Amino acid sequence: MDMISAPGRQLARGIDMALINDPSWQQFAQPALRRILDANLDRAREGLRIIEEWCRFGLNSTPLTQECKELRQELASWHTSDLRAARDTPGDPGTELTHPQEAQRSSIDQVLQANCCRTEEALRVLEEYGKLYSPEMGAACKQMRYRVYTLESQLLGHQRHQKLLRSFLYLITNPSEKLFSVVEAALQGGVTLVQYRDKTADDQVRFSNAQKLCQICHQYQALFIVNDRIDIALAVNADGVHLGQQDLPIAAARSILGSQRLIGSSTTNAEEMQHAIQEGADYIGVGPVYATPTKAGKAPSGLDYIRYAAKHAPMPWFAIGGIDPNNLHEVIGAGAERASVVRAIMDAEQPTLTTQYLLSQLTRMQTIRAYGTPATAHV
Image (cartoon, rainbow, N blue to C red; front, side, top):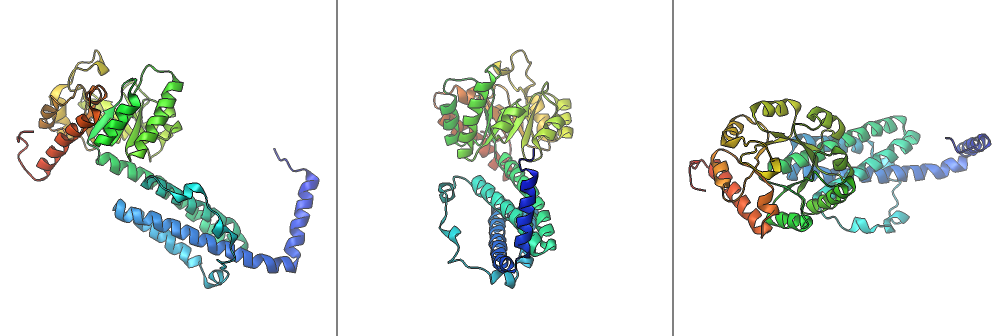
């Protein structure tokens, strides 16, 4: 509802017209306008350069690096000497202003997110004030703002996929009084992928637990996945969801989550794997390899399905189901490079040491295979 009365709108229009037609206002406004444009061109270019450096050196992504560079160059073409000449840094009151959150960054993700927001805000200012300076500039900055939105989504998605590729041990939680301490202990041991799974708790408890686990995981630069519940995943800013065969279809989940978040799928046979591939899953679970109370009543698929996945799965996949330090060597010997565990860590007396041991076995086999040592070597 429009909260300004008709007489109020008329008065505002009258003031605007009076100001616009006043030569003294024009004389005052033009230098201020140029300073606004100069400051925000600097701000946008600086933000893009910070993003570009990570795309180049952190992600080694040529397409993302090139997009940042092209945006910076387009902004530079609008940063004329006329605008630079209006700069008055000593007389700018904004140079003395700061905020506590600007004084520290706890992760690369925070750096990237802050500078994406910084660039987008600067482009919005350039779009609006640019209309007064040059209609073409306003239109160009509007299109660049949309490109930065897309860049941000691609960047977050790329970050998550890179972390997924580097994850070899996947911790799936079960209800526990020591939930947070065990997960943190596993993170300290090197796990980089955690799924919150609780089929019995009410929604308030699930939300609260997921929110805290997400914060802990991101503190350790680990990915955080929510089992089944897309709504909770979005609410706590999780990195994705994991879906079972009876859950929402992957395509429907993707339409809600977008391309930047991860979607995993449980599979128990070749047919389910092929369906997950066609639907666009980012990773799959392969199992259960052994009988497990997590999947009570479900017959294990055994090592044969592991061997099939090793030959046919084009995306990251995790062997799952009853895997522990005593049988991990069998799973690795059948061709697995990644494994998911629940009780092996959640019920361990020393979760950090158990995590380190499991990871050492998985990474050792990665090294053996990478350098061509026979896969039959003892693990």
